[in-house]
Image 1 (cartoon, rainbow, N blue to C red):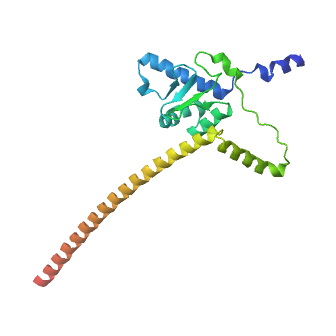
Image 2 (image 1 turned 30 degrees about the horizontal axis):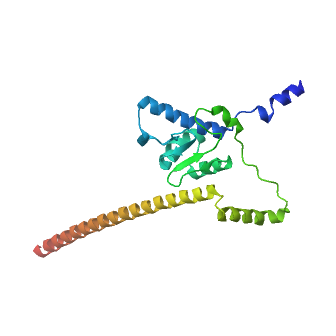
Image 3 (image 1 turned 180 degrees about the vertical axis):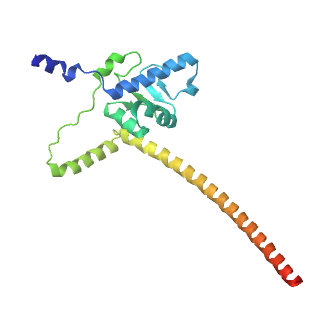
Length: 207
C-alpha cells in the first residue's frame, strides 16, 4: 500500500509547471477571443506568433495591467520575463517582445511537461566564496551576451523610468497651475480687503 502511494506522488507523474500552464492558457484564451470577435493584431495584448512556435507580448503596459493580475496575481512584467528565462525561453527579436521555446508551441500543450527549470550546477567553492563566484559568473554571462533576462530587465526599467519622468512633468505642470490660481485668489482677497479699508476710511471721514 505504501509503495503505491509513493509511486502515485512521484514528481514524474506531475503535470506541467503552473507558470507554463497559465502562460499557455492566456495565449489560448486570447486566440479564442480574437476568433470570436474577428479582431486583428491591433487589439491584441499577447498572442502566438504567425508560425505558432513562440508568442509575442504586443503591449507590455496592458499585459502588466490587465493580463498578469488575472493569471499570476501580480503586475510585474520584469518578473514574468525572469520566469520565462528560468524555464529556458529566449527573446528572439530586438524589435518586439517575442519569446520562444522548442517545447512551447501552439496546439502542442502535451509538450509542456517536458519543459523544466534550468538547474544550476553545484558549487565547488566554499560558502564564503560563493557570493564572489556568483558575481564573476554573472559578469561572464553579461560580457558574452548570454543573460537575456538581464537585458530585458534593463529595458523594462528604462521604460518605467520614462513613465516616471512623464508623470513628473505632468505633476510640475499641475503645480504651476495651482500656484497661478493661488496668486489670483490672493490678488482677489487683497483687492477686496483694500476696497473694504477704503470704504471704512470714507465712512470715518464723513462722520
